[in-house]
Image (tube, rainbow, N blue to C red; front, top):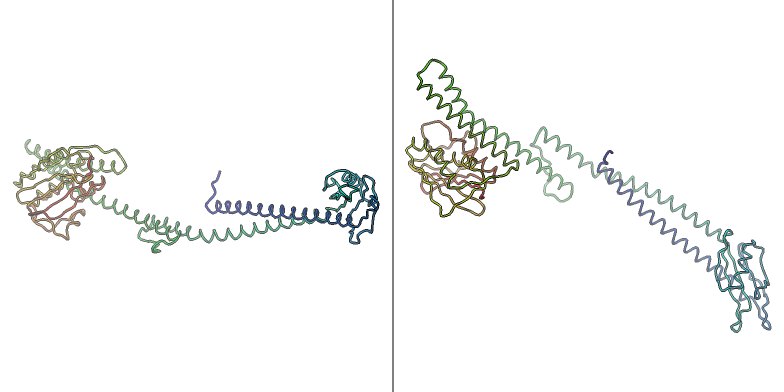
Length: 446
C-alpha cells in the first residue's frame, strides 16, 4: 500500500475534521429547528383549542356550542364533545376522528395521528371541578414537515459547499506553505551532493521555516565537517604511511641491486622489519579508533604501564639523543577507559616529539582530572610558539624550533595522535612548560 505524503495526510486530516464539524453543525441546526417547529405546532393547536373552549356556553350544567372562531384555517380541525358525545366535528380522516374520540375520554393532551401528519390536542371543559366535555383541536403537520425537509436539504447543500470551499482553500494554503519546504529540501539535497559551501542563512530562527533552515544549515555544516575530517584523515594516513613504505621499498631495492654479505642482508631485513612494525602499529591504531567511533566496546588499561610501554618504544631514539625519560610515580593505580595498544599509540608520538626537540630530559606526569586521566609530557627544549600551538597538529606541519638531524618522522605523528585521542573523547594539546615544551594528553578514565 502506497503511503500518503505529508500534504495528502494534512488534507485528509483537514477534510475529516471539517466534515465532522459540518455534520455536527447541520445535525444540531436541524435538531433545534425540529424542536422549534414541534413547539410552534403544539402552541398553535393549544391556542385553537383554548379559543374554542372560550366560545362555549354552559347552561344549567349542560354544554352548548357558541359562535365559531373566525380565524379558523383550512388545516384546522375542531371537535366539541359533551362527555363522549360529539356536539361538533369537522370533515376529517377516519383515523383523526377516532383519535379525537379517544382524547375526549382520556387525560391525554397531545396525540399525533400516525399516517395523517395531524397533531391533536384535547382541552377539557371543567365546571365546578366537573368535566363537562372536551374540545379537541387539530393541525396538519405537513407544512412543518415540508419546512424541516427543506431546511435539511438546504443545510446539507450549504455544508457540502462549505466543505468544498474549505478543502480548496486548505489545499492552496498547504501547497503555499509546503512549497518553500520542498524547495529547501531539494536545495539541501543538491548542495549535500555537489556543493557543501552553500547555506540558507535566514538568521535567528523565529518560525517553523527559519527553524528548518537553521536545522538544514547545521546538517550541512556537519556534513562539511565530516568531509573535511575524512580528507584530513586521508592526508594524515598518507603522511604517516608514506615514509615507512618508502623505506621498505628503498631497502628492498638496495638489497636486491647486487649480492651482499649476510650481515648486510640481515641489517636490511632488520630495517624493513622495523618499518613494517611501524606500519602495523599505524594500521592497528587506525582500526582501533574506527572501532571506537563505530560504537565498539572500550577496554581498560593501567595508566602507568601505558606510559612505561610508550617510553620503552621510544627508548632507542632517547638513547640516540642521550636523553632520559622520567615517569613520575603515582600514589594509587589509575585506570584508563581505553585499550592499552591504542593508548600507547596516542602517547608514543608525543614522547617521540619530545625526544626530537628536547635537550637532555623528558618528564611524564600522570594525574586524574574528573573523568579523565591526564598525561603531562615536558621537555627542556625550545618549546612551542603560541602561533604554532594548533598548527603543529596539522599533517605535514612542523614547528620552527630546531630538532634532531634525523628525518624519521614522529611515529604516528602529532596530527594522528590528536585525531586518535579525540575519537575516544580525549585530546592532545600543546603549551608552555617550566623550561621548554609541554604537551598534555587527555584520555578517558576507566
